[in-house]
Image (cartoon, rainbow, N blue to C red; front, side):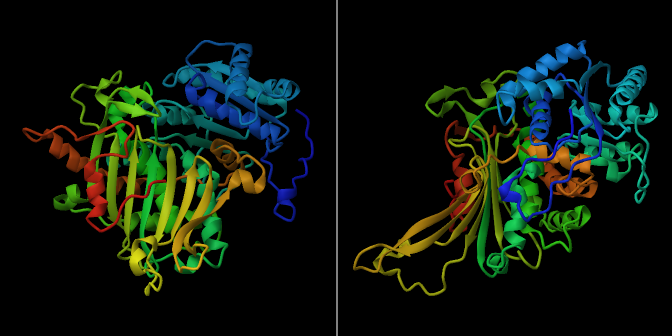
Length: 523
């Protein structure tokens, strides 16, 4: 591919120019898997199309499956035709891009395979004029994370960098979730990979942090003088976070039986959203300055005493029902799921953040499979005006203001407020002001993986999770899992309550928030 100047973009006039990474080789471990086809290669192709990758760049897929370079290129072409943000692919651009795609067969636990990979990378980099900067992407089963990192070190494919060092060439490792299954396993995994890599070389990826609306939380809060002054317990009544999916386990019953919705969604994705929404302003937009403030939020999460756990946390499992007019089976009827499973597909909780800003403000969070609607949002519910002049006989018409930040789908922000109805009577009705990325800017937001892969190449760790963040999150979540494990092992433990697929969850979740005189928002 030849270097070309980026196309002019009127939306970016007057803003900082996009940075282009140094020439880099990216190695994808687990290249025959679904993530590579659906997300990683389409993201790299889109970055190429946007002219954000360096002119000299190579991708090397690594997996156990035997395959030639040409066969791998053909597979990735089909994947990009189906999943790239702009499709079908441009034939001329693809021809140039594909010349930089290679494949290497190998095992994750075989030292000889890593020796062969090292030799192949040196050949490719010599032929392509690449300086040896490398990003290793671990799209492998979590059980292989520590093994792959160890073999990268043993084979000389990575060298541990001193914290303040600026090496002539870099080696960085992106690690997919889940990062551990509880506090103990997360700590062990951190210790294992720190034997080979320094923290600054480790990029723990959470694709939610690459979503435009999640990133926009920082801009929305700290670049607008009208919102931050009311972003606290003086004006906010409560906060609701929803992560709802219409799909079931989609053939991943074996994985979900080990995970459950609390591990799969809350510990990582939704707690990252909570930390960005609740954090204090960082002293600068530097990676550790931002992550320091996120960590403070996670450390300020008030532990739930075991005696109060059932009053603050509700779990359930979807039963047979109907979603979008289609009948679907219950969770226990899914392939690879135990007929006596106690794994939750729904969780709702109430918690507090014991900080100066949020003291006394309840946070309500829910996440589930087989909901009526796919939506992820954070909704700030403000307190009622102190003196309601316009209530009268229509007291319920005066609703508190709600600021909803939609993360997916239809990324955007809405603000509900009261307005006078036309006519002679002084009647108030709720109205909504909305901002949508697509409508406002006329462009499709980039995929999360595009932003995160690019940031790793640039050495920007802001949107990646630090070791102490992971452990702080697991510290809080593991207490819930421990309580559930004790309940499930008790003699005569009842089965989990159910909720019909296509509904908003069990009655106990409604009671959880209704006990405080509130109700769940219908997004």
